[in-house]
Length: 288
Image 1 (spheres, one colour):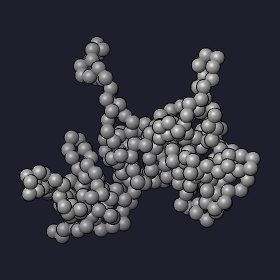
Image 2 (cartoon, helix red, strand yellow):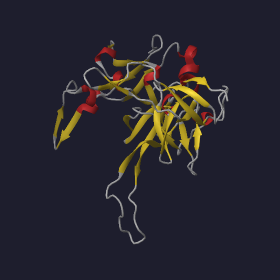
Image 3 (cartoon, rainbow, N blue to C red):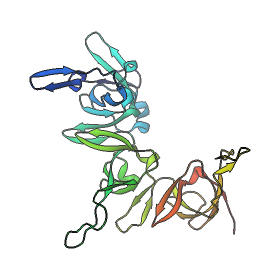
């Protein structure tokens, strides 16, 4: 079978996923019920994109025919289903493919990374007495990298690294029985936290210390505080961290005017900073 255009053909074993065995009885539940929770996110590659070679630089390594792949939940939808003469399959965009499993090994596709969240452990005395909480608590925006794409090491990230990720990038998925966050390397991971707690910036990301917070809200005619009308909030800050690979005029210590629309807050040693894209979000450099 040859895939047409730039699509994968994916076979999904719906019967095996939707079959529940209760004693000697097998029952099937209706997948249309709460489909967003019952969708299947893995299958087998029947055919690879016909035009893939033309866009290989964009998509990276291609999944192999016959391999088990994990993908975005939107793929398993009736709009993507094709009822062929001899087989039913689903079509999938290359950028919807997260990873493939080859000989039991997870190999990431495109720019995707699998990350596990960090839990704060209970602090105990030498005698074993718990001195803080009896439960573990989730540490927001931090995780341990478990699987990276081929270009991960050259970009500056490896399996086992502790990383900081952007807000709302925690896309949960179960891969080979393990639960992970699946996120994009360039888009969602601004820096690595080294063993000595120093920070290694990635890509075009940088960190700015705010010098002028400004107000995010204003009082309207009815005495109610609403978000400011100006969509682009510009603030003054001091650059504290930059990637080692830089090709812009900004250096650590510069005072800049930055756009807060695309940034997010990050905490370093109990102090708040802004993490932003240096090329995109810095609008003005103050000359001293």
